[in-house]
Length: 544
Image (tube, rainbow, N blue to C red; front, side, top):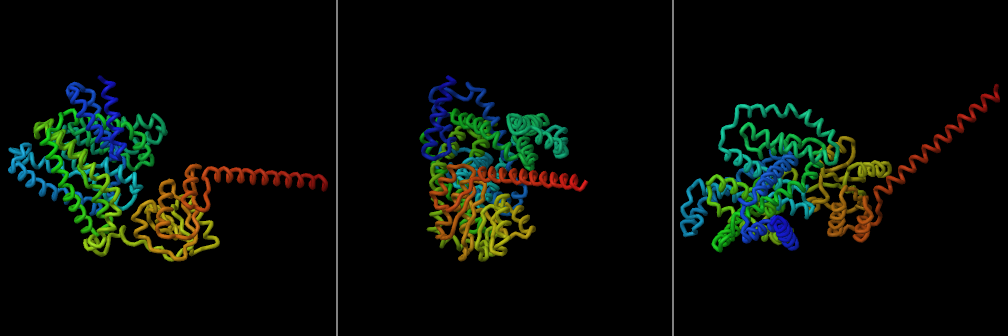
């Protein structure tokens, strides 16, 4: 039966992907299909173990990407906390009312059970939001960073619940884990030496599953908490992003097992589907609460709305919370199925809404602006650019080199844009006219002041999708000047030419030409030096 499990899972995932939805909905459907064939969770113990590994690696990956400083921003920690409390206050009486109206799944549930359900329903999907933001190229946008920060806070709330739900009193040896930061130099030294291949993957698995999950479980703490904390410990290393990418497919594959196990809990009845649909109808209230809170933290209405759309769904972490609650007997097992159906339906509506979010904002802009609080958030104010003739998007090595070359002849007429605040600060300290902003983000172009005398825009961002997006935005703003771009691949050059970029330079070809030019100069210099040395020897001999 194992081949059938893989084939059915693959087929369901592919079918769902074809309509532009996250494959995880297909995996849930595959679990229901397998249940129809008489397969349940108890007959596949390995699947349950893989599901646990998936959740552990998910927490480890979140830790690797966690910027602790971002969690201390009021709109993130206070926004997520207030939203959690507001959701609980809203959902508990609503669920109680639905039970009183005769919905059998809610009839007879006690307050603590209703609170658990409200807690699970308060979460938004990290997987869905990351996919939507990556597809739109908005991961580094302010609204994207706010949404991800809130999601990480929600994940931390979930991990806290999972830790408390373990129910066991931790060992006295658990206090020894406070010494883990002291081992950071040793761990980082090992991290430096594992290279970039399979050793890096193995190192990540050891960190997540041994130093994280196993060690924490030994001292009586929740393994998932250990994976998250070790991930946070490694987040400051230069290779943390590379490690997250190398473990990505392991995590995704094991999470397939988790979503399958949800479907294997049983098929939803018509009343279960009806209740799940009713829960999805309530999602806009979650979104409105996010919108209200984020505008009160002085974010622009557009930023608040776009973040709210990203968070307007139910979460896989809600399923994880429900899985723990049902395994402990705190909730009836049918709630796993109901929440799985609600999750799937919420994605069906959230995907097209996010795709149309910019158009919806344009229609609602007049009303939404009234929600804004002034002065606006420092990161959400208009970007002053002055009146430059040359604009450089991306101030890495190439962009800063181009800036310095232009500065020799056009000092005071150049502006650089860099999305990393620390790098923008560095350039400013070096005397370059650089402002912080992400040209691959729609927010940037919405906030950018106009420069009427702009003659040349140099696209020097490291990713082709960002350069392509910048070209589209410049066209939308009716920019009439010249466009130049740096590319890494020939097919990228072709697409930029078709978009209207006037001059394109291949990074590797230019580097090769520069390298040869440098070598030739050295050879000529050596040859000239030898000739001078020879002439000096001849002259000495003649004098002798």
